[in-house]
Length: 97
Image 1 (tube, rainbow, N blue to C red):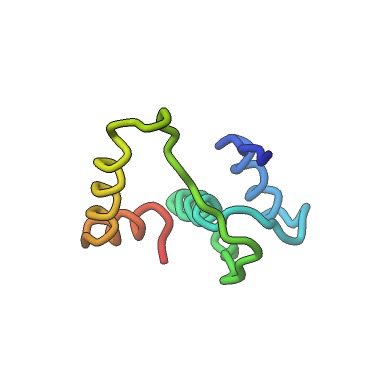
Image 2 (cartoon, rainbow, N blue to C red; image 1 turned 90 degrees about the vertical axis):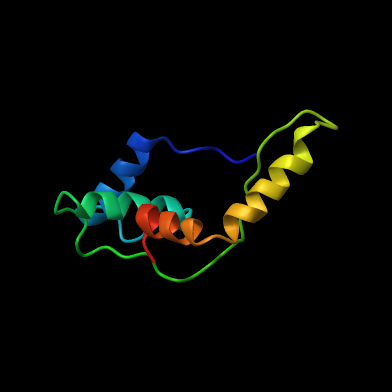
């Protein structure tokens, strides 16, 4: 079972990295990129970067009841959104490159 990290804890982790209390952090790249991008809006985390290494691919999901009528609708909607320019724009907005 994997545990979640709260937004406050994520900020604490990245702040510790910036303050050099830790040398590195290994966690989900999108969450780190988002936190660093938001910090840069406040002139923080300027020297931090997320390296392009992947240790383990992570998959995310939506929980639905067994045999839910929404499975096919949701899958089609997700595929449609992922193919759109709007998806790339939002990914860039929230987590950068």
